[in-house]
Each structure stands twice: as C-alpha cells, then as structure tokens.
Image (cartoon, rainbow, N blue to C red):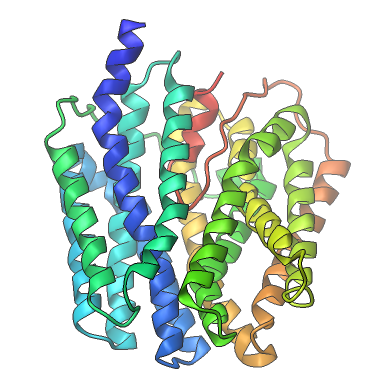
Length: 409
C-alpha cells in the first residue's frame, strides 16, 4: 500500500497538469468553431482551419519523440505548453482564417506532444500492479475536464479576448505544476520501428478503423460547433451538447471494452461503426424530438469507442515489444484521418447543407462496418496469440493508447 500511495503521489501533479490542459483545449476547439460561424466563414474554409489542428497533431506524432528524448520529459512538456499558450493568445489578438489555420496547426503540434510526454511518463512511473488504476484515473480526470470545459464558453463572449486568455493561463498553470514536480522524469527507451506495410498486413481492419475514427472525430469536433451556430443554437446550448457527446464517449468505454475482450474485436468495431452510422442518420430528422439528447449521447459514445477497439485489435496482432511503434503509427493514421475529416465534411456541408456533415460520417462508418464485419465473419483470428485485456481510452484524450494492452491485466 505505501508503494502504491507513493506512485500516485508522484504522478498527481502530472495528472492535474494535463487535466488543466484538457480543460482549456477542450473548450477552445469548440470556441474556434463558434467563432468561425459568427464570422460567417464558408464551410470549406472552416474545415481547412479545423483540419489544421490535426495536421499539426499528426506531424507531432512523427517528431515529438525526438524532442522528448533530447531534452527530457519536463523540458519538452514546458516547451509544448508554452507553444500552445502563445498560439491561443495570438488567436485572441487577431482574427484571420489564414492566420488561424497556422495557429491551429501549431496548437495541434504542441497538444499532441503534451499528451505523448504525459502518457509515456505515466507508463514508466506506474508498476504492472498499479498501471491499470493509473490510466483509469488519467482517463476519468482528463475526460471529465474535457467535458466540463465546454461550459467555460459561457463565461464570456466568443468574440472577446477573455476565453483565449483563460485557456493560455490554464496552460501556464499546468506548466508550473509539472515543472515543479518532485517526481523523477523517465529515462527514454529505444524504439523498435515497424516495417512499411507491416501493420496494415497484420491488422488491416485496425488501420481502416483508425483512419475512419480520425475522419469522424475530426469532422465532429471541428464542424459540429459550426453546424450548431448555423442552426441558431446559443453558446450554452452548444456547450451542453458537446459535453453530452463527450460524456457518452466516456461512459461507453467500459461496456464496449468488456465486449471487445470477449468477442472478435473486428466484429465489435464493425457493429459499433454500424450503430454510429444509424445514429448519425437519425440526428437530423429527430433534432426537434424529445429523444434527440439520447441519440446525441449515444452518437458520442459509439464515436468514442471505434478508435480504441481497433487499437486493441492491432496490438492483438503485433508482438508486445512493438507496442510503442504501433502507437506511433496509429497516432499518425488517426491524425491524417482527423485532418481530412473537416475538409471532406465541410465539402459535404457545402453541397448538401448542414445535414451533409452527418451524412458524411454515416457513409464512412458504414464502409468501415461492412469491411470489418466481412473480415470478422470470413477470416478467423489467429489462435496462437493470447488475447490481452484492454483499457479503452478516448482518442481525443490519449495519444499513446497502443501501450495499454500490455499494461492492463
């Protein structure tokens, strides 16, 4: 017990710091969409601005490990946090879609680096006996602040300096907490690279599922605030619905995670994608119906489980010593999908109207469902590899989920 207590004491400031970052980053993404809607920016331009965040995110997945290895986790965390805080303040000073596109790319680069630094740190500090609890606490803390942060939008006008300034302040406080921690930072471990095409050959459904999850997450979090603003929803209403979807993603983690441990993960991912597609098609016709909040909650829930189930499937098919490499590769695939999602979704909005966003998400998840179910029913999984229990973590919270299968027993 004393050993476990000392571990949680050592990582407490780290979890608190990353939670503050999630609190700020969560509502800023929604704020960007609302502001673009208020400025009457064309949907395609709004898609470009929002996709830039995920382009920076994917780039960081390739490069941030080098900075962390060269400078250490604490200095890298400080550099990434300062970079994002500066980007937020420039958002507040000057509005221009081109400038904001560059700023969102910078913010995405820094945030992904922060998540990777944090989670690799947690991986090293936790023991096999405490790692599951550590990541459960991490998931709940960051997702709770991500959902709760949406209500910070009600503190001031979306066009004011205040909301961006508050976000920058939260990042600076997080920086202080982590830089003054008494916990020792981990020693970098050499990474084993994957061969080109190795992951796609071993787990094609996982690669397709990760890319599709990126498409729908990027489109949803980037364009739904724009969609809501065009529909005339108030800022408190937008904050409430975004928080509701995020909460759904958190609460469905455990039941879907248990199902994915008991059945072929390809089938679980396929049926989750199919249910999501059906819910996306129900959004527009039921938006004035009393059951709409329930459908919205479930939509966020099933959107949130597609990525981690496919991450688990990828790790089932790869040796455990490749976990870090699998993580980096899946982060990159998810980031590319997330960058493409707002662009494709905004194109559908321009062509079909605001409902085109949900038609787009339904279409891509339907394709994933067909592919995953066909392979799941026609190709048996290998019996030589022991299935490993998996702690599901949301993609918008965690950037290093692929390590979890070896961490949770």
